[in-house]
Length: 415
Image 1: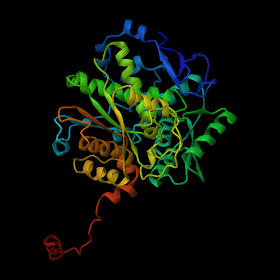
Image 2 (image 1 turned 90 degrees about the vertical axis):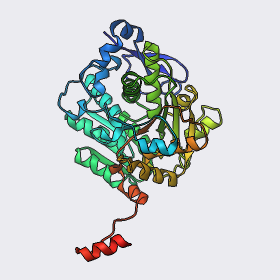
Image 3 (image 1 turned 45 degrees about the horizontal axis):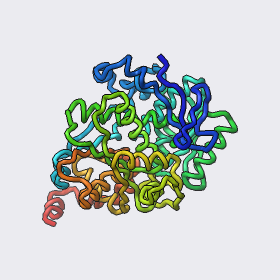
Image 4 (image 1 turned 180 degrees about the horizontal axis):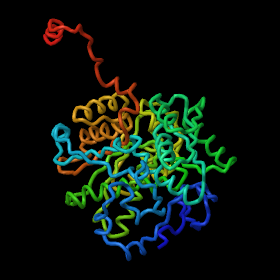
């Protein structure tokens, strides 16, 4: 069964054959949506055919994905996805919510949500016979690609701004990727990586550029559907999902996944999707608030490097993800992000700044009464706090140093 039928431009709706290996619309540069054979999938599969699958990774949704089975059993490629959801009672009580979940993407093989996209892109590159995959990244997407590529003995080349957190650069190098640091920002790294891919014939994974990245990220929506709606039976009100937004590809992927489920008739109602951006990197939110799909670049500056983007490459679809689901955009300050890191840490969740931004957005939404106590809410933590220790240390006090004696300990405890 051919599940993947071709591509459709998100701007002009022009369709392209699946035999054309293209990234964006040749006509207007718009992002391409992968067209799935929803009718064929619906005829062949029932919900139980998916939920009864034993594989506990994103590959349990293989019937809904536009790639064939890549094999590579017992490798990190087969371990991406199927991340846990937690129900932190203390946070729910603090916010006055009856039902709150946090989906922990830090449990992915390289520690972030980006493993989902990289797993699908690596599978696609194997299908088309590409030996080299390249991407631009502030760290997470590059680490995800480097890790997934290493798992299948594929060469990864990563362009990253020299300001990328050292922990993330270390990951790239440990996984054996060729790392090229750029004396510029993420957008400069993005442009150079695209030029290099065209010049040398490399397969380009870039977020908001390669249409298969959204197909990987939509598996997050499939899991939320299965974990919250199917397993917990939560369908009495629309689920409100809070997710941080940089390039716009994660929120677009979630939206695509839920749209696929609605088209299949497996989802009763579309969740509300709330995009969270830092006030210092708000290009998508600015467009949303202006009621336009015209994304104007900003000079991004935020401690949350994963969502620090001047010109979001998937901005139009990111605007639609909130607008078409009765969600919204919410802006948070960097100090609120730091505070959210500490909040999540107190319930055992170590979030990187971008992941904590989603929780900061929920706190603001509750304070502004955009969320009611009865609304079921899920916060997506997109990555592990180990990705950026420098910012994490701003959320806590440094540990004291005492002499190794009971007198010193008692003196400290008295203070």
